[in-house]
Length: 67
Image (cartoon, rainbow, N blue to C red):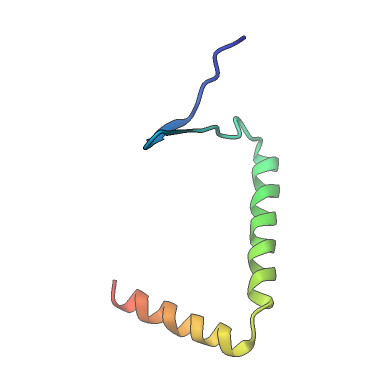
């Protein structure tokens, strides 16, 4: 059995969590994944009512002003 390399290891009480990254990505694969993330985000945004979108925009603008 080969030794597994982890990007990070966390100990939370009696639980050990190993984080494994995706490894090397080509520029094309990275672009494809980012496009899918953006598409999912816009799909979630579009599922909101216009009133909820407006409320979230106002909340974000207020929090940016207080930073």
